[in-house]
Amino acid sequence: MIDVCLLGTGGMMPLPYRYLTSLMTRIEGHQLLIDCGEGTQIAAKKAGWSTYPVDVICFTHYHADHISGLPGFLLSMGNADRTEPLTLIGPKGLERVVSALRVIAPELPFEIRFRELTEKRETIDLGFVTLEAFRVNHNITCYGYSLVLRRAGKFDADRAKELGLPVQFWGRLQKGETVEYEGAVYTSDMVMGAERRGIKLTYCTDTRPSSGVSAAAAGADLFICEGMYGEREKDKKAREYKHMTMYDAAKLAKDAGAGELWLTHYSPSMNRPGDYIDAVQEIFPQAVCGKDGMSTTLRFRD
Image (cartoon, rainbow, N blue to C red; front, side, top):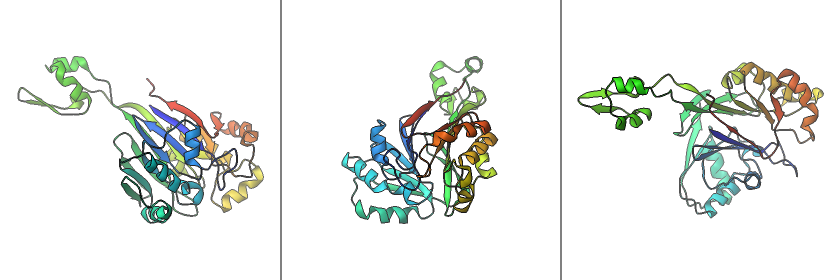
C-alpha cells in the first residue's frame, strides 16, 4: 500500500491557510517526498508526519515555491541525529542548486546522494518502489513523477508440489530467488502466476497539458495534478506562463483513465478552489480539490 499526504497545495507564494507545494508518501516503511516548498516541514508536523525517516526527495524543478523549504528540512533531519544517507532526485543542475541552498545548512550528519535526470523519461528502481520520471512542458526543465508499486502473481502451491519442492523453499521462490534442490534449479516463474495489478500514483505540476502527461499518468489510481486557475478568463495567462487550469487537469485525468484526481498548486489569487469543482467534475467526476494535509491510503485491488 501507499500512504499519501498532500502537505502543501499552494503555488508561487504561501498563504496563512495554504503552504507551498509538497507531497509526502510512505511505502513499505520508507518515506518519499516530492517537492519541498517553503513551510514543508511545518506542514508535515501539522499532518502528523515525521521528517526524520524520509529516504528520498524528488524535485519537479527549481523554482523557489518547489525547493525553498529544503535547507530547513535538511537541518531538521540533522538536528534529529539522522545518519542514514538521503537521496535527492531532480533535473540536471540538482547538485549545484542544492549546494547553493546549503550555504545556510553546511554541516549535516548524513550523506546526500544526487541523481540528476537528463532524459525525457527515466525509470529508477528505488528498491521499495519504482519511480518513473517524465519531462513536462514548463518554462524551465521540469519533471512529473509516477510511483509504481508492483505486485507479484499468486504463488501456485499445487505446481510447487508437482515439482517436488519442499515447503521450506517456497518463500524464497515467492521473493524471486533461485533455488537449487537435488541437482535441479528452480526459478520463481515456475511457481508464480502472472504479475497482478499494482498501485500507481502520478504527480504533475507546472506544465501545459499534453498527451505525454496523460500517457505517463495512464491507469493511475490517484493523479495529483496542477490546477493553477479555476477562472475561465485565466486560460490565456495559463498558456503564457505554461501552467494548467483545473479543466486542463480534468481532461488529462479523463484521458489517462485515472481512478481519482486531486487538484493542487493553486494560484494565490484563487481563494476558493471549491467554487469551480462542479464544472471540473462535468469533465472528470472523480475530481476533488486538494487541501493541505489531505491524505489517503492506496491499496492493492483484488
